[in-house]
Length: 196
Image (cartoon, rainbow, N blue to C red; front, top):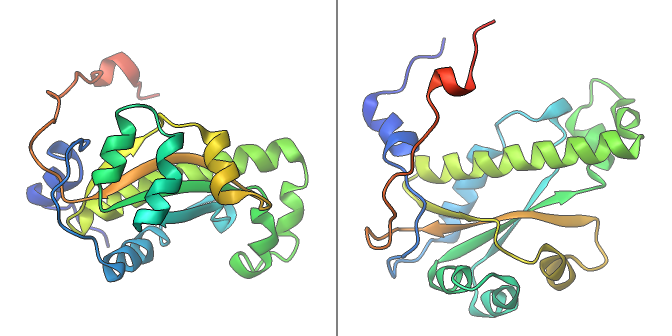
């Protein structure tokens, strides 16, 4: 039986969580990265397809490879962040379905249509990227998601010769209160939702 999270947890995950632009000089350890992944991997995807692949760019060398492919402004934020994750989509995700969805041996065939496969991979890797952000926040890390980058350049730099394609980026670490923009408006329930 699930129970509602307390107000503090909801604040940490949603109400007080902000996109970070300035980072504290405090490292994110490998154990934290692994703990984060062990949380996000439990969240649902279609037929448990798990098409996202996560490249945790932590080293100075890795950051130097990523920096030229970021929009001006995003490059500085990424260099200052302890870790930036490239959330990628594996277009060959169905190859792992015999392991991930063993009770349906024919599951890979469900994605033989390239259009269905591409839509499924993109939708679910995006979901997994969002799960990554919620998992990070739940273990006390802040997030700085970014879509301002040259995806083709990132793919050539990190994924050449593979079946991976970058979806979006997310820096992780401990945020500073500096550089946080005022909270932007949100749509009300009645502006964007209906109970049918």
